[in-house]
Length: 154
Image (cartoon, rainbow, N blue to C red; front, side, top):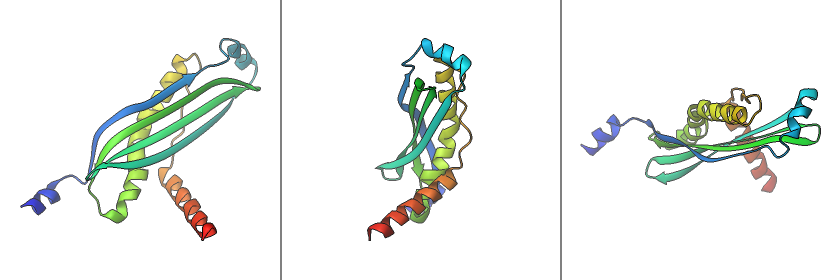
């Protein structure tokens, strides 16, 4: 009976999503607004994903987004967001990492993207619209770098 119940359970469940950490700074406001009217800003964006087990088949997945916008040598704004989701994952062990680091971030990303756009707009800047991210390519690149590091350290 327990085995039949387990087979009837969904292999992937989104239990909840939330802002775990959010920071926005405009350290050179209001002077930066005049500079931005004359100079094209330089925007640097970093995105990272990590996951950790909570209990049984439940995991927390964190999508980290950090962006810094500069004009000339002045910082216009810095935004840091950790957007998290709690997921129940019932897939074979060999697929779990892929689901956690590719599929879960795909679900979280549109919400994180909207938050970043809203916060930068509310901070007085044009909304920062993050481009879509290929989480599979990101996962594969990170795996290759980790494997290269392991080989280099062997």
